[in-house]
Image (cartoon, rainbow, N blue to C red; front, side, top):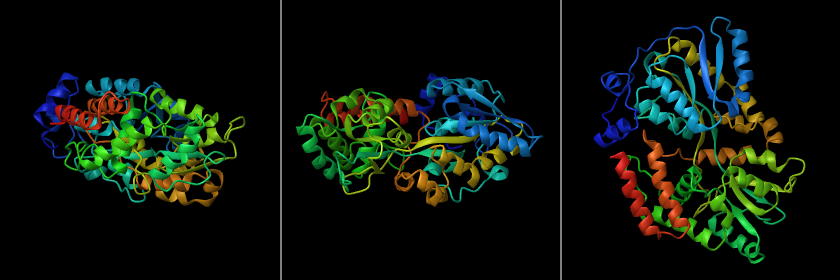
Length: 418
């Protein structure tokens, strides 16, 4: 495992997250436990909100592997509670969970703490056919620590009764919104409530204007001209009401209700909203088109969502754990994910014409995912996200100008990454 910066070690220690770091620092494979390829029964932990997509996969596995049965361990619905449960178990060195469905932003945190068995050596596996961005999200320090299970990318939704032509770049969105705003109606709703949504939108705009939150070396790039231009575009759009004022109180579900209720002409949201927009009773049924996000010069950059499956470094049956993770992403199971509006990680699924007939947003989602970027890979992502949230929100709401907000953001990020 690569040596971690002293400030990062101090941060992790303060948060109680350094268990395993000493042990893993001397191992060539980057883990604190013994890597094995043993087979036998395993447990699979995942937040309860999405386990219905995995239940048939587990049942199919168990039918064909009676001596290596998978037991589903449902975690809480809230992501923070899921993470806390896993962290407490892993800090205790428990093998209670063999395979864990990790939010993409947790992978680096768990890997840095020596809690995940790296997928190297006897556990090496191919990522051929998997979309690039999900693989990046499962990689830490140039080492694969998990297998992507499902992914997610944001889309631009448009009510064709209100906005007929698909915008090709951000200026087209601004122009289309002028007439709608003049009628005192909401044009574009997105997630600017002060939570992870602000981090995502700030990242989307910075990336879409050629900048970003972190550079390849892990240093903040929020004060670059391109990053500041992206944040300024977001600030301007909120100020001139291209982005609806209600967005600063909106999470994904408020966005969904606003769009499907016909209260906003366009929206940025995840793919699940497409089915909601076509449901009986939705004001948008039969008049919705979707496309990838748009940015300064064309197709935009979506922040990546989804789950990565990682192996507990204390698992006694890592061979089964790896085989099960590979089974989850075979073509049949990935197709079942797509049918359930649970975006798959296999690129080929997005070209299946039978699926596209039922899920017409899939080509747009594939393009979104091909241009997507994982959130900043950092063992202390929570603190980094808060630095972006606090300062991005302050800029959007006019409490700070963009220069001040990005300077403060840069300082706060450096405090937790250097």
